[in-house]
Image 1: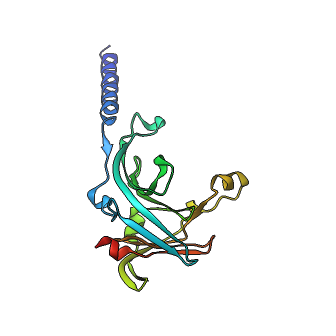
Image 2: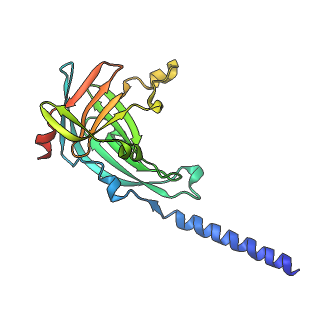
Image 3: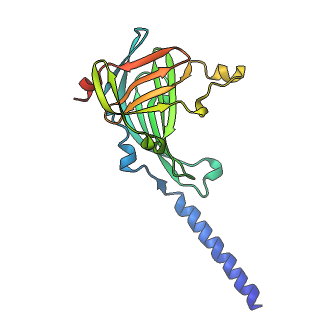
Length: 213
């Protein structure tokens, strides 16, 4: 009799702790650290002027930087936390919910902090993505852009997850979206240059130093 009574108390305690965990977790957020947020060198009203090897020129204006909480997916909501997302907004998209140049976000069930780029210029969307751990593992190199040398540049190669889909339906969905094969990222100035093999384009930033002064 005592054994059954004890078992019921243990089960009740486990249920109490589980419910308490779920209820408290709903109001918790897995936040980006200050060091992680510092990977983004841009500020509101920054103007980025790009020129391609085909003499095309386009401009991106940074309209805002927002830090928001993102709720977990429906299937994870009982044990996952909210996650934090840093978005760099621009003026070159008609879609208010997808106007980011960059977004940086945490994940619930891993230690990864992801960063993704959507460079919308010249009527196309050039995309790239990686995580901060991969960036931090890369050695910095020098890059000369428009006669100016930068010494804090990392070269981000295209990953397998950004391979172009083969089937016709996916190709329709990805129309106008082009994976970046090499992205040259300065820790002080952001995007300096990117290369797209599929379109035979190299885009370079013209006004990095002038803009950041």
